[in-house]
Image (cartoon, rainbow over the protein chains, first blue to last red):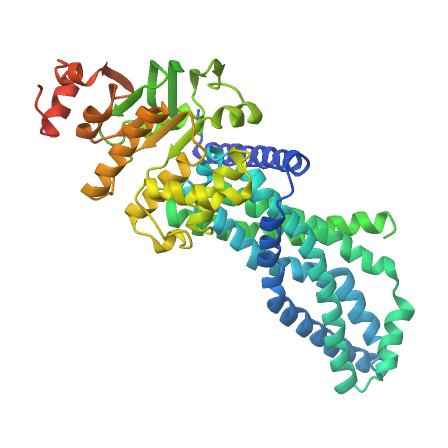
Length: 262
Length: 246
């Protein structure tokens, strides 16, 4: 006997399996075309500007103020515990380099650039522009996906380095002007207790995040259905999925990197 | 030559095309008519494998693309096709010049320096000039369709597929597009498949007309014979279109 709840669960499970299979095929196609097609410099540069350069302002604001608030909260806590704002530089830099730099930048890029990519590809899908690509001697993987994947993979790590620097700078500003920490002590705390491995821990993660955001945004765009309403729905779903996956992946990749000693 | 054998297509259990078989000979202008929602666009999209049929063969110049999943085979066969989309399907982010030149880059070995001349030539063919720098959002519906037509013929394909070529056009532009379709067949020997609900156009320009109804070709005939068909669907469609049977 059919049970409506079980039937619904089964249907959802099947559609999830179908989506995963379809995403895997898209990925395979991207990998094939990255090596097979001629590098589309113009299109890739255009996408790098859209994804990277256009995300700069929001990255600057987010990371700078995050660094500031980190310094403020940690300085206050240390003052309460040890009567002195100790190791503010260490803690701000450690948090920014290993976690907040990569995670916040990825969330910002997923929300801003990921949404743009899904909306653009989704609109092309519902207006038959994707079909037109096939009839004009190319295909969406080669013309749309490969340049976007490369742009995400190049710009997100660079934006993260920028965010790390700005976060540390924001922390420095608060530590020096509000907490009375000497500038040399702040910098000394960073260089004494942190090394390249700490930076690499966060930096490596951004490549995984960039790959995931590109996959989710492009996949959702290519599978858009139902006109303008469908584009809106696909965009929202892509942003939510990317943001959640950044958080989930962050734990597992961090655990993996810690296990291998990075 | 395009040979279609027992073509079947369904969407979510709803059968759209049922066992369609027809041969489209080189140089022919084959029109498919029928009411909206009967699967005309589905048929034309299956021909170039923008949609994968459930079963059946689509043999283009000896190569069956009906069931192949090889991207490279499909890409190779598609190179001999031009496709005019119902709504134009121009790339929003590109100018008219870039849109029309798009196929030249991927379908031909023509040097880049030649693109502006060819683009201007093709735009002139569809009655447009000095629009190269405009974006699709700055064009009217009719202009978009004409730019799209220029784009689809830029690489001089062997086969042309037209999905509702005159829908949304004014009478003057309709006449121009009609002449262009027939000229391309006469001068360049392009084999054309036209999908339309405009029976007048189909009877005027085609070498053969097929009536698609409930997933099947209920009549396939030359225009003169088509007019005299005894098929009830054809008769009704002729009456609705206010066309005489002579």
